[in-house]
Image 1 (cartoon, rainbow, N blue to C red):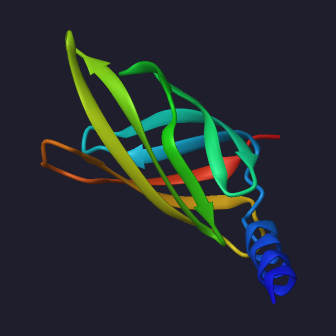
Image 2: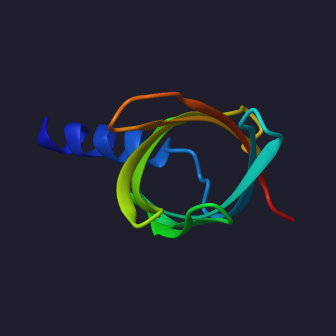
Length: 120
């Protein structure tokens, strides 16, 4: 029984979408499109990496998780000398070449809808 549970757990981890690599995301922030790049690293269901934008600079991906085609993580970004935590939730499409993400600030406010595409 223990062996069956271990095999089942390994199969569930193996189902995590492989989003490792470089991604370019865009969002409409009201004043025109904004861009953000992601460098994702996936190990089992653990997601790490970094992200960069012109507005917020470079941030490390924290608390990252890939569960099937669902992706969650957070970053701590610096904006005008203030740090803010942003949480991201998203879903990988069936081809594995696009992620629809929503980011929200821990302080509340407007959420941002992102479309990330795998960089060539």
